[in-house]
Image (cartoon, rainbow over all chains, first blue to last red; front, side, top):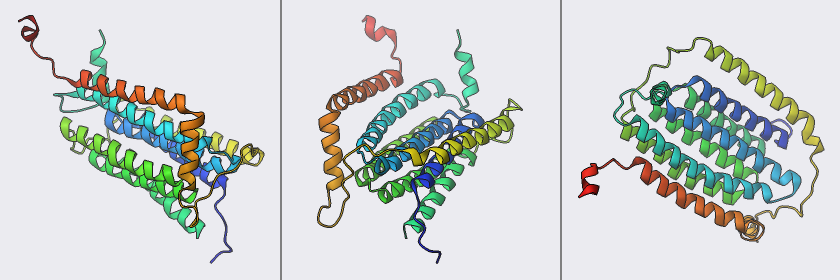
Length: 105
Length: 180
């Protein structure tokens, strides 16, 4: 066993940066609106992770409070977003965001 | 030990995240999202954020992913889609290049700046055997003390979101019902 290397804040922040980038690439390469929404959730989670990692570092609970509010707003955002997706995509067999171009007046 | 937990959770998070963007079936993507969310919850526990870990599992894995799965089933898009063809040919290489670039910028910023973070609070209460709910008490004091106004606004936001979604997804009845 290697001499106990503690994971430092930097490691957590690098992991959250990686998670954020994966979510960002996902939004750009996927065409399914539901999967794009999941990628947005990935990005939100990455930011939450960095908030929580920095909270002990700055010795302040406010980061965790911010994560709580991000969770609530994410829930509201998912509800509204999925409602919009359902009302647009209802009755279509292939759900891709390219179909939404047909909505333009 | 902490390193072991970190590595396991990081592998869960990254595998799940890659699963979300690479699986062609939306149901599999949603289940990979659950893996990522649980990994993040483990990392929260490792960082002494016990309350947020519980909320993460309950709200994200319990509510949001279930909502995703409901919508996938409702729309009937739970078949593997064709992710090989890409209508915009340049988009994938560009997305990869941009992703690597953004990660490089973020990593450089993180590596150079984490040493300069200053302590400016009175410290986190650490949960232990004598005081098993220290984290919850501290976060409750913050939410219902310093941020109580934001908390009330957020509750209105949730109400508006629920009402708005019901309005959005309601099937349009015939106008006749109204005119009679």
